[in-house]
Every structure is written in structure tokens, then in C-alpha cells.
Image (cartoon, helix red, strand yellow):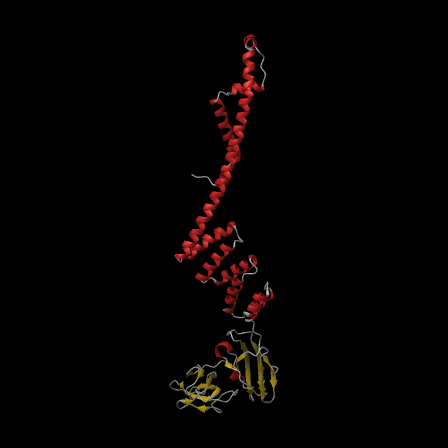
Length: 384
């Protein structure tokens, strides 16, 4: 089994290097006995005294051999350490490169689970590496994991505060969420430069203002809604979503006697970004029939066309189920009822200019649907 760099024991390696030196000394005539005679003086014999001249020659030779051996030992040891260090770096680099290539391969194969495992292993070694974070962002985007992607983009911004693309991607994720304006405002407040701040500021839309204070009123009132930024305003009077069912605000809304209104209004800028809502409840008249405030049991009518801008005359039709009657009105701000509406008997001619059609369905028991409101703009094309 191959050893990793962390498996190496430098003390063991030193012993192995010293053993190598000892073996080489033996091969070159430097024995343990010879080494001992250098460092330890034993009592001499007569024969040794007779060989003083020879011994002196040996002693003169041995220090030189020992020096060579020590130098050789140091060189071998230094070479061993260098080998270990180089092997360790190469091994780690090779392992990282293999993990990186495996991550890329998994992305191509759309195996995002395997790709995420690989990139997490890479980030464990280098958690602030922008290339690895970018890979993780790509994996999250392709797999649809927007929650994790937001966290990754924030880490990229922390590591690279001027990363314009990271701010853009995080902004797009926020725009897909409800109540996103607070997050966008916070992002804009923390922007590192004017370029990023300006880009984010284009997506910050303030709420509309209900000029009439919500509350109880004895008589008919007019509700004016304004926008500080001059944005388009969409509203509903029955508490439904102004994004899904809102009608475009074109002028003061008449709040009629003996009615209860739940107003929800929202602004929309030129980039079709919706801002924060404004809401208000209005009770007009003391004797309000609160049963009318309850959610209707009759479904809203279907109207065709469903709104838009036209240069040619259009015929508007209402889908009326069997057992129901439909009523409509072009009066702005009027709470439509069978009493003040016109019964639908066939196609309706679209008037010129901007207009809003209000439609309700009424069943056999007198139960009526919520008001369906559709905006039209009809500007006849001028003859050449």
C-alpha cells in the first residue's frame, strides 16, 4: 500500500538513512570495530606497541574516512528530506487535480450529487478558493438548489467584494422570491462601489401611498393612490393579490356607501419589478353587511381577451356557465353588483383609450363571485 505524505515518520527515515551509512562504511572498510577504536582508547599490548607506526598511519587515514562518511550521511539525509517534501507536494497536487477533474466530469454527466461531493472535498482543503466556489455555484444553479446557491454567492462576495457577476446572480435569486425588497436594499447598502450600488438601486421599488387613511367612514369616499417614483400602480379592493389579480391604477377610486374594502396596492417599475405592498381596510357606512366580506363561493368569470394593448377593434366575450348570469361595468372604482352592472347577453365592444372592464358571475341563489377586472388599451392605427 502506498503511503501518503502524512504517513511518513521522519525519525524512522533518519534511522534508515543512518543504517545506509553504516552499510556503506562497512563496504569501504570502516567497521564498527574501527569506529570504536577511534572514540575509545583500549589498553595496548606489546604487539600493538610494535606496530605503532602502522597504527599511526591507520589513525591518520581514519579521520578522513569518517569525515567522508559523515558528509555522505548528511547528503543522504538532506536528499531524503527533499524527496519527502517533493513527494508530499506532488501527491497533494495530484490528488487535488484528480478531484477537480472528477468534479468537471460529473457536471458534464449531470451527476450533480457526485460533483457536489468533489467540490466539497476541494473546499475542505481551500475554503476561500474562488475557482472552487464558482464550481459549487454552477452545480447549485444547474441542480436548482437556490438556497445553497445564495450562501455560495455570499461567500464569493466575501472573498471578492467587487465581483459584479456574483451580485447580479444573487439579485436574480432575490427577485424570484416574495418580500425581496428588504434583501435587495440590504445588498445595495453593503455594495462596495458605486457601479454595483447603481445596478442594484434600479431594482429597489418603493411602496405606493394610500392618500386616504384606513378606517371607518360615514359617507362615500375617494381613494387616491400615488407613487413617489412615478411607477405604475396595481391594486385590488377585495384583499386578493395585486400582482396576480391587480388592475392598473388610472385615477381616484370611489369607495361606495355600505361597503367594506380591503385594499392592496403595489408599484411596478420599468423592469417589471414589484415593490412592497401597501394595504388598508375601509368601512364605508355604519350598517355594512359583513357577510359580503367573506370569500365568495362562486368562481371568477373567464374573460377573453385577457387584457392588453390593441390597434384594431376587439370583441370581448365572457364565459357564462349554465345556471349563472354575468354582469359587467366600465365605471372606474365602482364595486360591481347586479344592481349597478349591465347584464351580459353577448359580445362587448372595446372602447378606445385606456379602460377597465369589471365582471361578476351570479348563481341561481344570488351568490356572486369576486369582481374580475381586466385592463385594455385600444388605440386605432392611424391611416398612412
